[in-house]
View 1 (spheres, protein in one colour):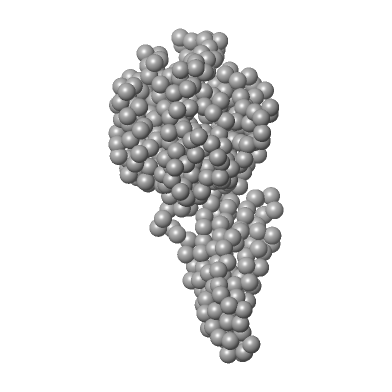
View 2: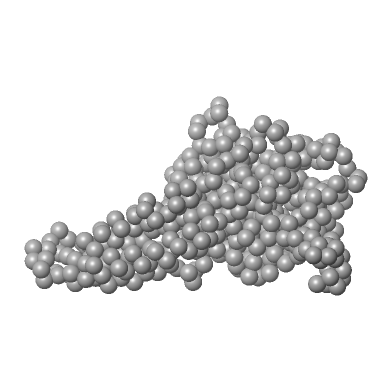
Length: 444
Ligand SMILES: [Zn+2]
Ligand SMILES: [Zn+2]
């Protein structure tokens, strides 16, 4: 391979990997000061209280995926007040804001906006006013933190060496809002993206993540197993779908225990079993459903293939028919959330400067999933968890619990991390949009 080809190859690699450059103007100490200053700025009582107020307002009015109309309106009103231009609507209720030069490089920071269809059981002044809907995953706090980051960045916009793009994303909880934003062109020209999630278990002032696969890819399935109903005392005249479904469930358990590599973590869970309504009637059909998880696309697709095969074949053993639905149209296959290795280094530097390196925790992969994975599948991305637990107070409930609460003292940390990850990315990295495009074209 000649020299030109090597140069060309290096350029091609650059398209996919941000390459660190030494910032000419700022020393490591000066870069560290940005992170420390941003945290102090975010902790100023006025800004911290403003974020708390926003979070509480959103908490009182939770909206489900693609219905975040009031949340979206509130976000736009705050961006208007700050003089931050934005695009709307993106993916129904999504908002994309821009801070900085308006020129490349572009780095995105993202918050999800949707609530869950569940009743809040926490009794407090700002309890959900909508029966059956609750911000039980902390997305209200995510929006408040991203607006807090917007405020910090807008107040320091002269220091931005490029453009920070704010992603307010709809429908994270199973709706595939990130995918819809990508289809609407949201990632065009974006060099890297950062996202965070509040963590009930991790102490406040700490963050946790890892390079590579962080969260599993996930999918859902539902199967209708049909037989022939009849009197429970005359089983010979029926084709019993309850027994068939039971055997299907047992067989599905063997996919992970007998077919998967024990070192390649996977899950198949049947969480739904509906059939029959009387003690003495065998029903016509049974519906089962569940979820499956894996840490590679190959394992994920293999599981999907075998789940369908096992359900159909095992139902047939008991003379039943089965139809299997993976809800592919609703786009609820979430890819594996993979953290870019170079961005991991950036994260450790930025968060380490802000919080102290001992407060940057390495975490093991989790079987949960996140639709941030759609972004990080398309461009270099990085996702991390933000600690909330104050050891002197009561233990916080986990996400998706009706007793879930937020430690609002964590809001300044999230805002400052968003803002300094983005600001320092623009200062310290030479993303693809800076490449000599004509040269690249000539080489190819
Ligand atoms: Zn959630
Ligand atoms: Zn969430």
